[in-house]
Each structure stands twice: as structure tokens, then as C-alpha cells.
Image (cartoon, rainbow, N blue to C red):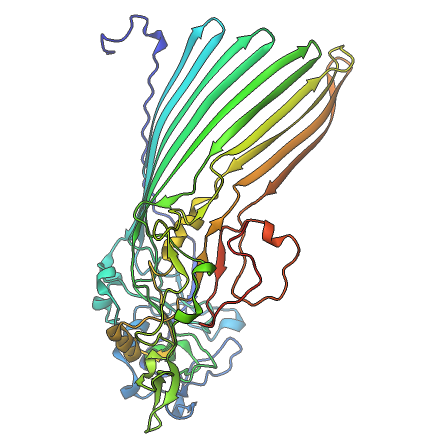
Length: 564
């Protein structure tokens, strides 16, 4: 029943409701992955071969990298954590008939890489819209639309116990266990093992993402003589709450590496011995509250100038300031904020009086455990030198700026040159602005000083413990920069067509349609030294630029910053 407060003429009211739910178990097809054999899990590699059928030699890192006798690692050299890591994989249940892989232990399953635990993924959404069309006068019309929508995206392990590091015995030390309340295992990779089973799960697990959009459009049309005027406003406000996805559970690589003095020449052997190639762990897991608002106003006119000639023209004004984090966590490298005098110093490799490898402070000569090689010297310099936070110390909330108003004219025409209704020439063009997509902005939350992701090289499980206990930082693998004054992305569309009617029903048309993109989002590495820049590069705005910190030396470059 409709409420009595509504008009008697209820034919003007329409109501529609729809709701749909789907539950799916997704089958990803049969896959083959390589897992350690039963013998390899005990340290016995005497029957381990590569894809060419050649025996894999397991070297002893503590004995000049000479092969272990019989290619078997002694029991007292195996670590409990290493054995637990190899035992999370299922046993091989299939031998590939392909001769090139006959010596590989393969396991078949219809899930992802292999079924540690299913991941439960949910993405419910909802939308409410009110649409009103009214005649203000015989020649004036109003159309109003108000809408609100929201979608929520989550995923998490169906059975957390199957990826619990304590229950699985993979008790690798963490800097801050509170950042992984579900106690999930670290991500692990096994470089050098062909098609290795991968126990890594998404860094964002468990993940939460909610996007709420409010939308209003109000247009007024007016017919006056040979003109059809139209004006309107478009307002959109979007709030996105999204968890960052840093490697707070840790990410460890056991891959083979000729530069690693602890490398045993096989990733599974490295894991058993407790030796890693790289280990990275993030220091924070913030949740962003990202907000932006678009406001656009337009004026347009369709004018019938003559019986055989019509014009369409108008202009649209854009006010689309950059997206920002209400919680002020967006971070970016800014070259103008970099001070060589406060650059941090790295602990360097060296040896103590007993010829034991250690980390050395190059300033004082103080020594630290070797696992701290490559970390920052405590109390020296600024680990976030050159990094800024949006909304603090004069930095714009969105890190970069654009002009407050962008003007976009549009123009079109239609002309019948012979006034016989059989020929028409049409043409037109328009300018269209848009903001950059949200991911490059929201991704800045992963930069220092909001999040540090120190990376350690060539160490042992004990070294991870030492670094976690010391709380020292080391260079983050890479950071990105989104700073300076830029130009909104813009598309120029244009077209010209000639249409001719032949006979009673045949039409022939020749058209040219073009589209040009300018000031589009792009990226470049600003870390390498350069001596000369191609003419005109500095005039193109750069809003998202990766910076790989390969060293802690001062950055001197001819590139313009911020971009114009």
C-alpha cells in the first residue's frame, strides 16, 4: 500500500527493488607444482635431480661450499623451522611423464598453487537512487538524480589454523607480532625450484575495503526560439576505507644466489639450514580513509541557426582537487626535502678480531651481529630523509596540486550544404578532464615514514631474531613519489564525417575520428644520475614516479622537480 500522504495520481510514482546473492566455490583447474620429496624433507638430496636429469649438488656454506658427503645434510644441521616449512607442502603424488620433468616431485590439485587453505572472498554492494523529472513551465524542464552506493570487499583464510605460524612450527621472529593478530605464516619463495609450490598469501590478508559514493546531478533545460539551452551541476563525493597491504607477516626468499655466502645451491636445502637470501618485514599496517569530491558545472546550447545548419556548443568547468587521506598518512619522496647532510649511514660488512664476520659502524668502528649488515647505523641521520607526509609541514593533503578550475569547451555542427536532406557534414570536438585513478594515490600510504619495509640480505633465522630485537631499520626496497604541481589528465576528442544518401535507403559515410591524451599519468625512475634531459621533458607533469633507493648517497640530477 502506498502512504496516503502521496498524491492521488499515483501513476507518477514508480518503485523498484532488487536483491541478489551468489555463493560460489571457484574451481581453478588442475595445476602441477613442485614440492620437496620425502627424502629432501629429511635433508637427503642423494636422489634429487634437475630437469636435465643431472644430480643437484648441495653445498655446505660452513665448509667452503664443498658438497655435503653423499649429498646429505647432517641431522644436527637441520633447523626445526626449516623442517616445518618443507612439511607444510603435500607429498608428491604424481610423476610427470614429460622426460624433462621426470625427476621432479609434482603434486596435482584443483585449487590455486596448492591448497594451504581456501580464501573466503566477499564483495556485497548496495545502491539507492532517487530520480525526479519536472516541468517548471511549458518550455523549462528539470531533472534531478540523487544516489548513494557502497561496496565492501573482504577476504580472509577459511581455516586460519592451517596458516598459523605457531601451530605449523614456523616461528620466525617478527618485529611487531601485533601487526599480524591472526599469527599467519610469512610469505616464502623458493627461487631456482622449477614451478615451486608457493605458500605465500596476499600481504593484505585479512583484508577490508569499503567504498561509499554519494552522487547528485541536477540539470535544467530551456527551449527558447531556435535555442535549446541546458545547464547543470554534477557533484560526487567518495569515501574509501582501505587497509594497506604491507608485508607485516614478513617475506622471506630461500632462492639460490651466487652472491650469498650461505647459499647451499638449492632453495629447499637453504630452508632446512635456516639460511635466507632476502627477508623483508614492514613496520606498520595503517588503514587509509581516502576522500575526494568532484564538482562540475556545465552550460550548453543547441542552436538551429538555419534550416540546414545547426550548432552545438558549450563549456564544462571542473573542480577536482586531489584525493587525500583524512588520517594524514600519505607519504612521498620529495627531492626538495632531501638533505645530504642528514642522510643515514649503513652498517658495513667486516670482521672482528677473531675473523668472524660482523656488521661495522663506519663512523665509530662499533660492531654488531652480521645479520645487521645493511641496516642503518643507530642514531645517525634521518631514515626518512626526503620523505614528506601529506597535510603536514605545508605539504598538500593529497601530496600534489592541480589548478582549482579546469575549463573544457565543446563544439559541434551539422550542415546540409545542398538543402535537399540527402547530404550532411558533421564535425565537432571537445575537451574532457579527469582525475588520476585512486590506486597511485592510495599506494603512497606504503612509503616511509608511514611504513618502513626493511630488507635484509644473506642471513639466518637467528639474524632475523637479532634484527627484530634490535629494532633497527634498513633501506626500504623502493619508494614512490607523487608530489609537486601537476596538470589534470585531459582527452581531446574530435571528428568530421560526410554522409550521403544514395537511392531510397542506401547511405555512404566517410568519417575521421580522433582522440588525443595529454598530461596522462606516467612514471620514471628518478634515482639514476643523468647529465642531460630531452627537450620538453620538464614541461610534462609527472604525478607518480618510482624511486629505487639503491644507495644512500646524495641524489644530484638535472631533472626538474617538482614537475611543471
